Image (cartoon, rainbow, N blue to C red; front, side, top):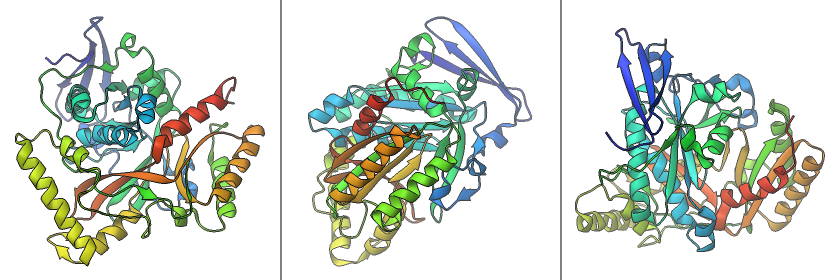
Length: 429
């Protein structure tokens, strides 16, 4: 048995029903979570959700359904990410956060899973059928992260039922990016509570995962880091996190996004960081060493390095001369990429990275301060001159890929710190 702080067992009773046993090895205390829903039905929860297309409706609960009680949130956080930021290693931080999601997705066995990238960590929900394998992969990444990326990672597996028992809820929506590509959105305060438990003394709760000690690396196939940082064409990459005071955030989120659109004088989507003028590809890519590290599950590092440089050279050739090689068509991929970024998302808080002018950034911050003083929203911001992009390629031939966006030099991590300063002494209603 691998030495996690918690251990999961499933007992099947036919007809697709099962009992999940969650045992804390440190305290020898066990809990039973009984699922009365057929495994197939609960496993297909996310894939069966209807998608919505208007981001202005991201906080409208008509687009959300409750995450099943027998699912589990696997959450992660880079340890001492602020120190890494000060050392100029925020790209490494992003890579670890994306690697966590990649590791779990790669053992999903075709099951569609809702997840959100947070910059210095991530959240992904898994059904009972994938719980063991997801925890195994999280443990592998914990053990390997320091060696691969120079950073330590902490993770936890928190049952949805435990969050609900503690007064939090978690709802899931599906936002349409392009044909076959979606982003999960989370409503309720379940994600925030899970993050708090992860960073607190969660060992006493029995949810923390410990590094896997079998010296095996996780499978991070599909994790890529080849595009150069996205330099702001308008001057400023503004990272914002907006947390409404009211639990029912529909009106506040729509009002805020409409007001930001008015300040920008155009649709927010026209200020996305990934743009024709910001997408730059060079050879060799500056982040290729991180991608090579992510491929450490392969047995031969020399062959892996040669393969990474060779495919990067082919990609550069396609980008430079506008030709196609195999399934890769540079012009098509760029257009798909621009549609498939997560520059705006919702997990109980609205998160955005926008390419704006310094004057527009100042006006947005002034507006948010007025909303904060009026007790409508709590916010945090961070400004940089570029954004970082980390890519996850599911299938090039099927045009299935998603691209994680974060502000440079701290991005979401620094905006979260700014938000926490405003939260002190604040009580949500």
